Image (tube, rainbow over all chains, first blue to last red):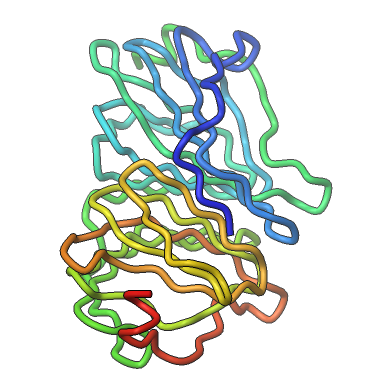
Length: 131
Length: 131
């Protein structure tokens, strides 16, 4: 059993996968044979992920603020503290802050048999974001 | 993609598996082939789980308050909001509130190939709890 009060250093969200200012804290990584990763992701207003998909799906749980999510072909929807979002395996989607509001969510994802948790696509354009 | 703002009804922690007053909220269940479950578990002062183990391990993330954890053969240790606890696969352990403090944590666990996430043992005695 491992208790960690001090977390690893916050990482900046790589520009390859995010638009705007994003900070990522490692909450936990499962011990094998578990595969789940838990991250706390902080998005400054206007910041968002690129389009992406998870072979085993993803659970988001909003811990603070308000933001937006969308899936390929769907409308942009608002999310707020307390909301839980479940992305289906293989479903292309994005998530991030609101244009004027900070957002923090937990992101929880398992790995597939290849060890892959996320596959990344194109950045979310301003027009997709404000749609 | 499913966004849920309203959660399923809170369940009382079964007396078979818990001591004291415990309430459990379903935060999310992964869509297959994902297996991860996320629960928010609220422990009144003095309340705790029974001894148990998880075949794929478990991640706890304390969202509020202060409490206690221990593993078989180990000391009782304090946990506080912001702490993350990782229980190893197969490691017998328990967790709960402090004697005088409420605790809420997220509990995150994957299922093994049998679909099992948790195996339960004996209740934690007062002497184990206050050790």
